[in-house]
Image 1 (cartoon, rainbow, N blue to C red):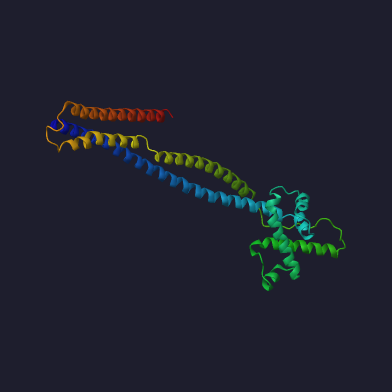
Image 2 (image 1 turned 90 degrees about the vertical axis):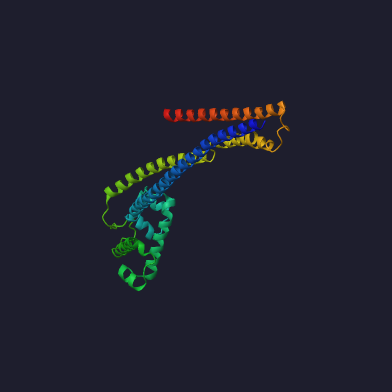
Length: 288
C-alpha cells in the first residue's frame, strides 16, 4: 500500500508541476501582452491629446476669422451703433458664417465697447487708452471699427444726411490670408478624420484590456490543479502515517486509484480543451 501511495503522490506531483508550468507561462504571456496594450493605449491617448489641441487651435483660428468677417462689415458696425438687434443685423449684413447663438456674446461685447466709448465721450483711441484704458484691450480692432463708425455717423450728421441708412465708409481691417484659412479648414478635416481613427483604435484596445481581465483557461486550470493536489497528493499523504495493515484492503486501493485516474482525466481534458481553444484563436487571427 505504501508503494502505491508514494507512486500516486509522485506521479500527481509531476503532473501538477507540468500544468503549473503551463499556467505560469500563460500568466507571464498575458502580463506581457497586457503591458504592450497599455503602452499602446498611452501612445494613442497622447496622440489624441496632441491632435485635440491642434483641432482646438484650428477651430479657434477659423472661428476668429469668421468673427472678423462679422466685425469687419459696415452694415454690422452701423447696426451696432444704431442699437439694432442681432437678428436684424445678421439679416441686413447677409452674414451666414456663424450662428446667432455663437455671435450673441460677441455682439454684446461690441455693444459694451460702443457704450464705453460713448460714455467717455472720447473719439480718439490713443486718448482713450491713455486717459481711461481699455476694458477689452485684446479686442483693439473692435474699438477701431466702432470709433470709425461713430466718426462716419458724425460726418453724416454734419453733411445733413441724417436719414442715411448705410455708412459711406467701410471699416478696413488688416490684410486677410484666405490661403491660410483654407489650409486651416483642410487641416481641421484631417484632424477630425485622424481623431475618428484613433478613437476606434482606443476602443479596440479597451476591449482587449477588458478581455485580459477574464483570462481563458487560467482559472479553470487552477481548479484542475487544486482537484489533482487534493485527491492525488493531500489525501494519499494522509494515509502514509498509518501502519501498513491499516488501509491495506482492496477497496481502499481501488478508491485511491480511482481518484488518481479521475484527476488524470481532468488534467488531460483540461489540456485538450485549452490546446483546442488556443488553436482556434490562432486560426481566427490568421484568417483576419
